[in-house]
Image 1 (cartoon, rainbow, N blue to C red):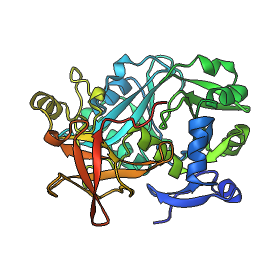
Image 2 (cartoon, rainbow, N blue to C red):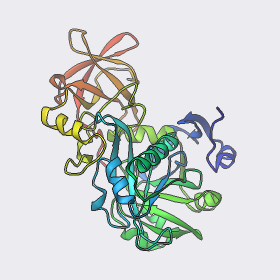
Image 3 (tube, rainbow, N blue to C red):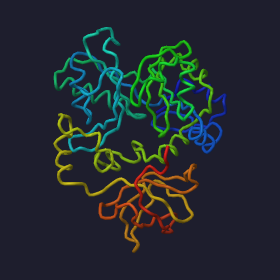
Image 4 (cartoon, rainbow, N blue to C red):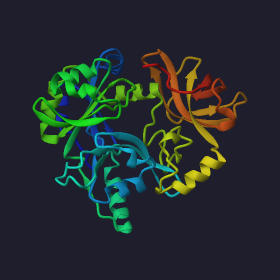
Length: 368
């Protein structure tokens, strides 16, 4: 199957970007170097093209009920312009995807009396989540419209301590009034955009959604270091943020929110698919926990590397790992049985057949 292209594929090529396949998309992995782009975000600002992320709109009289039943958080707590992080789980409480849910202004689709939402599936999951929402909408007989807008919107993330100023310069100072996880429509370089104070790097900043055909206008208006998915990955690892399909996967690495360290997204006083299973897990406890690892010897831990105890018995597996550009030290993420998961526990990570000494920690690895 042919890869999907972001709207600025040719623009990124002209800038000298290198590309990689991710979630069925051909995306820039780096423009200059991962280290340079990573440091720009930690020290000033960088802009990412994240147009591979999905956008699913849900609106109509029963939109709130549909969103409530298919995400783990409590969407009834959202006022227009607010958002929340949530998981999407199956009947057994296994994470199918994680997402950010935005409550849009109620009149965004022309009807001021009906609620409207936008949620962001991870790359390559838009078809799956659209089908899931449509299937359950029909099964439950709900009056709601579900629309896959993934190829209607471009999405950019401007991240770093200088990011708020850069965005306000082209969007107007009102965006600085947005708190974390708040969003609003604003005009950016003459283009109406959905501007959200959200991100995936641990730094302050915004994510901007603009019409697909206006992508170059918005991208070009923000003058900072262009960044690829390579730096996005190292930045999120330093924060201990989950990567769908790698730190959890419903088939290859099935995990529930409590194991994955995102139990705060689960509101058991609401009704959603997987709620009963998660209530039982919350009551009985988990067998494994998501943890960070600091390697105490030379080497770089990678996805799939085994974690052992001091006797060489395998007790876990690395799901993500890198050389931290900020720390200059190797770090990793993965799961351990609860009896081995206490911070400070000494373990070994098998790097190319050699068990390297490591220490269990609780992310984040860096302070922002």
